[in-house]
Picture 1: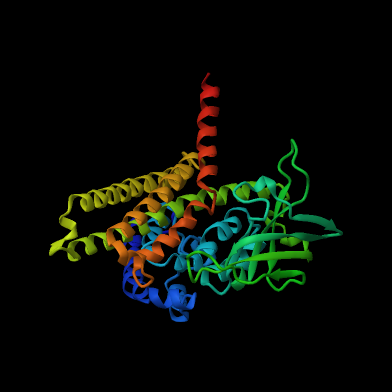
Picture 2: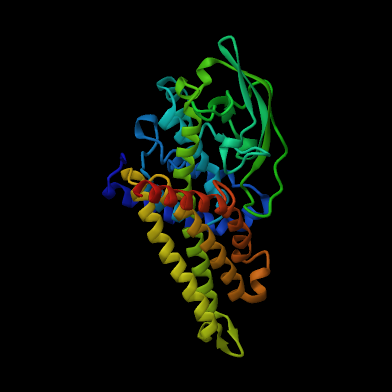
Length: 387
């Protein structure tokens, strides 16, 4: 349940939209050139409560539910995706693990500082040999008296160079009938043995920093075990990822809308042989495909978010939305570059960096292929049950 009524949410959404379109969009060239979010934009986002919009009010956040989260995400998607990355893990996969599975003491220690942006939380799940499926995890945690010792390597960890807290997934037992043997630990970034590698050089999403994180004989107390129980880990991972998939789908819809707006504006003003290119039917056909994708994606995201909040579907529809919307935005961005012609390949034109940015959406928080396995497998299992 949301802590915020629909009536009170409307001005929050309007404020975010204005912030994105008047304060962030004009600074996109600066974000690209410096590979960083400007400090004043970070401060403004923190003051608006964006580091904790999905964290309950009792822990210092705004307390928005997923149906409201996706409305904000569609606005965040309208600009450089690195803006959303800056506070995305606090609200999303890292923050939600604490909200839903943390002990009262863990929530008290961390959530208010996460919600204010004083603490940046990183979700340390992905490894060189375990990506979209956490079952392949190799990072290990072993007991040492009352403490735990963590050893392993994580890869492509968002916000790792800036993180104050790592939410670390580690294997405490071999998978078996009792469960997958995965637990979650809260590891402050300054803990001895935690080493953050150099910032990754990526195809796009300038300003969103990722890096490898290595844990070597990292000792944490018993209180670092999320939920105070080993069996919480895998459940926490899958639940957080499912929620995150709906959020990423909404982000894709926002970016597709930006592509459409840029394309329509260009088509109406750019001329070929004295005629606006938007008068050409083949250009109109691309615009029509873009608009259809955006409209379908928006409806699907809202349906998936509502089903998640009600509890009707927290597995299949999130994957359906993630699969459709992230594939859709790739096609919409491709059309946007095509409509812009040679200009669309130039660095200073927005659709060029958008084209590079959106390629990642089909990879993280579960690849398109993993989403297909989740959806197809669930459909077959349901049919077998009915039979």
